[in-house]
Amino acid sequence: MPEPNQQLADDAMHSGDAPMHTGEPLLDVPRAARYLGMSARWVYRHYAILPHIRIGFGNKPRIKFRRSDLDAWIRQHRIAPSGENLS
Image 1 (cartoon, one colour):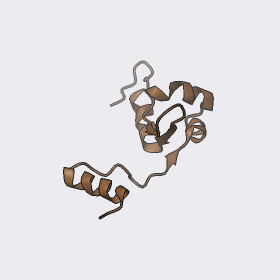
Image 2 (image 1 turned 180 degrees about the horizontal axis):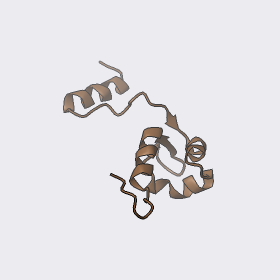
Image 3 (image 1 turned 60 degrees about the vertical axis):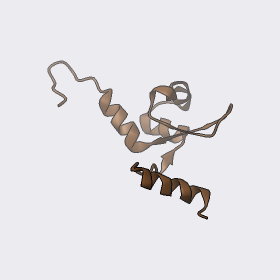
Image 4 (image 1 turned 30 degrees about the horizontal axis):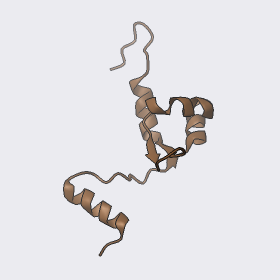
């Protein structure tokens, strides 16, 4: 019988879903804050509006971020100066 993690990966492959792990390192809150140019406190307060991965349950789950997801979020929320076309 395969190990539990391998079983999940096999199930995802057979269900037609792409595997969740892209090989991209996950950023913790302090690193994501530094990447965004914000404080860790700001990220903790606003993580729900940012694309994130929640690991664990209960009072202290771990919140992680992919840099590529943050980049996409920044692009989607960019406000163009008047007269500039973002397309």
